[in-house]
Length: 317
Image 1 (cartoon, helix red, strand yellow):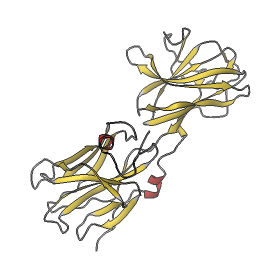
Image 2: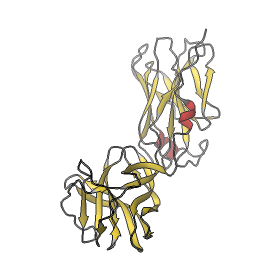
Image 3: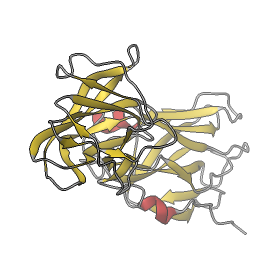
Image 4: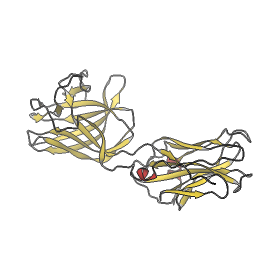
């Protein structure tokens, strides 16, 4: 009896992309410290992006005045431990009521998971500081600039500066493998994975890889924008795990040794998308989900080819 392929929550994968959802926040509660107002300065709060995301909106908890202000995202200077360069700005007008307030960026700001950034608030005198109640632990690292970002004071931390903020945008789940790889005539099981950031605009930086492929075989990746599938691949042990219609990618060689399971297929998908006109579903946009699988020659098998398991991934802008 042919066993059904293993699928990893395919319905959940469809909902992996969350447009304009909260990608990262700190002290996202209705409580706030109502005794601190800001002066005319730029306040910078250090943060570490928990995941790769495209931030399209930034919010702080503020009020007490009516004025035009601005929220920024800046890169991090590792050498000095201070803000380095402006990545994007979101001008907004504060309303007097103390609540979450903010603005959209003109274009999304790409953040890399695990990297350090700075939320910079170009504040006006009398503005309610976006602070939660004092805590038992130190709050995030922060600093100020009084010369419009030309220089920054030494960063500090304190228990009564528990800053509050929200970063919203497109923050998809990381690529997720699903389905079951076929077993080749040499006993190999090809496993698909990915590194980097899948993007609708970047020209490189997202590599699909299938390891455990039979050595010295020709192969390729193919993908779909239509969802998951579960169809037997002929009379062999492989399964077709992406739904038609599909798009074939560049032909590849697995390398390795003939008869061994040390072959690898690798493709920079962002580069393939950039350099290949007329692709299925083009032009692409942030938030789209794709399903990919590897195909390669296996002449002794019933269909003369075998398939890897599959991978679902979501594009950032």
